[in-house]
Image 1 (cartoon, rainbow, N blue to C red):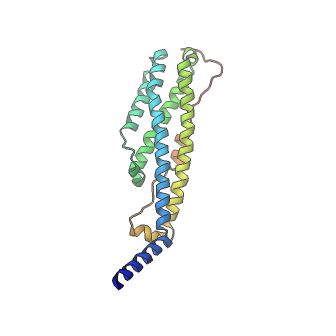
Image 2: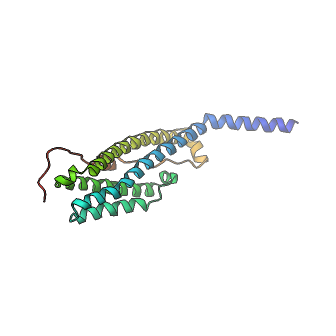
Image 3: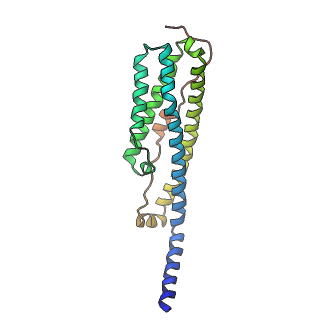
Length: 203
């Protein structure tokens, strides 16, 4: 009986100490990071799903713009080759590779939108205009989702690195998570230009 009481007291003290050292806070913040990361991936997937239809529509009016069409297709393929699992945020190198691939796709899509300005018939096509609008909306959603992820990771990383939480984090193997860098943010946060102004001269 006394042994059971002592055992209960030890467990109670352990739970209290863990709570006081930020363990529960880190668990809650870790779950928030996972939730925000899932939304980032959801929006990136939404963009990737738009690419084939966008490329095919442009090809119908500007098939000779072969280089940019290939660049967009290849950039999308690179994005698809990366296993964007929840564990990716715990691997700095893998996360950087993911960033680079998404940045390359953003850049290629921006160039494709610029090229489309030279084709009045393409710009007037209802399907293309709808795809442009969807792409712009998706880029905006990506920016919002990414910013929320950045904030959640900042909060988590601060908790993990702050004393005495860092002792608890080290004890349970909880490390800082990868985040988007300012340099890459500038590159991938710019949505493709959508300009429905005066048509440019066709090639």
